[in-house]
Length: 332
Image (tube, rainbow, N blue to C red; front, side, top):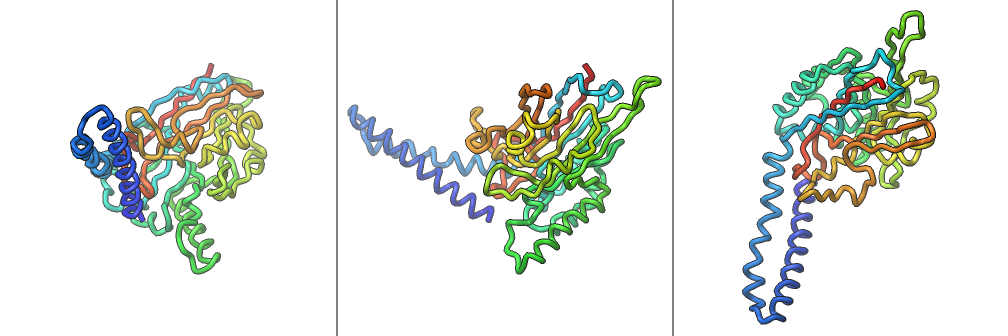
């Protein structure tokens, strides 16, 4: 499937290049230049797309970056000032079959950040739960003071495989869940956890709520399984973090409709492509990559879209490095 996608993409891009060359040569001929000479001399451009893909496959997909951000808010309890959250997303473990050392390096880099909490925002697999098995020991290295919380992404429901029956698919999804729990992760299927620390002497304890939903999308091509109201029910944190795989969920149900302070997503991979500052992913997703901030009735609400770690369909990254995001909460 990946080779087919690359082949189709190359045909499409090459066709577009030839059309542009024909137009340029035609325009040049109108001013007296040789149509054939201009066209033939421009054909070298056709080597650029395959070279970019080769670079993205050999080097780009193995390049990692750590993004550090401070989240300042009056809602952050004083005892959580300086609290460090590492956010990772979209491992798509199948894409690490031929490069296990890169996954090991990711684990090392996460550990080096000394996080208080690790958040994984979905898509552990691409098509099958068996992708997880060879990497169980490596993934167990993800540890923090308050553990690892995770949610299901659209791929974790295994919809992109031809199943004999619905029962087989359900069994596959259950296997993804059981393997995550076997790793010691706290899988938040429409649920939340309250992280509690001692507050001011004589006062109430300080609390942050980490809320997780099954995948919810505002786009019809992606299934929705989550229940935000159920996940938030009883959450008592002064500062609320929502982990939701698909960033389109932010505008459809979160922004201006809840008191969620920070939503952590992935899903887009930033299309694994950025050229000269141009991000094609923005043609599909309004919130495509990075931090978005808006003021709502409940105060400042933020969304962060992580560029992910693995690859899907297109087995390369061009101008978009795999990302580990480190948030430091700051009490204002």
